[in-house]
Image (cartoon, rainbow, N blue to C red; front, side, top):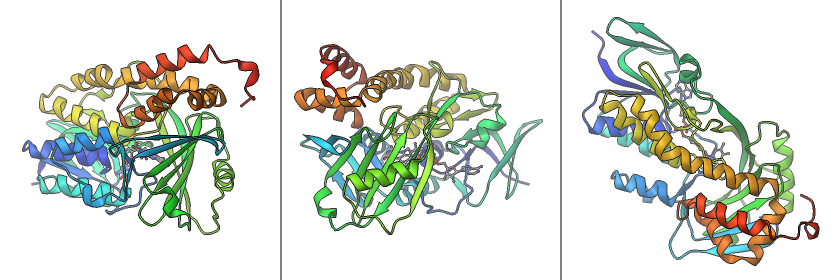
Length: 378
Ligand SMILES: Cc1cc2nc3c(=O)[nH]c(=O)nc-3n(C[C@H](O)[C@H](O)[C@H](O)COP(=O)(O)OP(=O)(O)OC[C@H]3O[C@@H](n4cnc5c(N)ncnc54)[C@H](O)[C@@H]3O)c2cc1C
């Protein structure tokens, strides 16, 4: 007879693997399924913020052997001009390759006791008299609970009738070998102005640069052209490169409902991505942690409640700051050129060292003082 699981988790990205790890460590029988064979490539800047690193270390997951670079300096630019550097004593972001990072988390889940099924695409869920039957492209699996950790195009969310609305932005990135690699060591560039409602970035890795551009606006188009222009402005030669893109889902409701019957959604499947920075790994991990607590209490509604009380307030504040920054990038850039504390605060929200609420206050009070007529139109 087939084994019956406590939970089937669809998707072995950070959200799914970390949730499987948490449940398996508590002796819950867990199946982690993914449509891909691992390790698998994942389109991502691979920036792991200090708050995400802390969460993993607290859970006894050390990924220091995978770190490609440690970031102590953020440089803000506006259309690649007017650099505003902010430096830190300690690393604020660790750079990884997501294929290695995700596989590391998946291996922790398996070592803790989770069963991993690769090349198993989730197809549908069916109610049975004593639980759920999860149909996949491989075998059918019996379970009490189903978790959608299957990313921005979540099929589990569809099977639940899309309980959460997500605003879908998009980002493209490429990985470049560059003779100017050394210049970027320990430093990230965050550039505003090249694209509406978004930004461009340069993230250093061990042997290459990860350069990308993204927007939170569902209306934005022509991403590859924007990336080409960004690379040209950076003066980075770019004949041989592979450009890949992926959706960035952010919350579009004040309050979210992420559970229905015996299923719930975590990470990108739940739309839990920071609408100012696009950081999703921390929210994938944190939502997985909250989901594990709710599942072990057999009370899925407490998961939506926890997300609404612990994650949504900060994401809403991030949206307010994003509105100022992306409506008037030139004005904000001119402000941070003059006000180093504000520049520091802007860098600090990227890794979780400052709250968006304080940054919003700082920006909102300063921005009314700007002589708008002196600022070139964005
Ligand atoms: C260009 C770009 C750059 C980014 N840079 C950063 C960054 O630097 N730092 C950061 O914190 N965030 C970044 N993000 C966001 C981050 O990548 C995501 O938020 C994060 O990967 C979400 O994790 P997840 O586990 O929810 O989903 P994912 O990592 O997307 O994992 C989902 C998994 O589900 C599997 N899957 C999908 N459908 C099915 C199915 N039907 N059946 C079975 N398996 C399925 C997939 O194969 C995949 O392994 C970036 C995003 C983009 C697009």
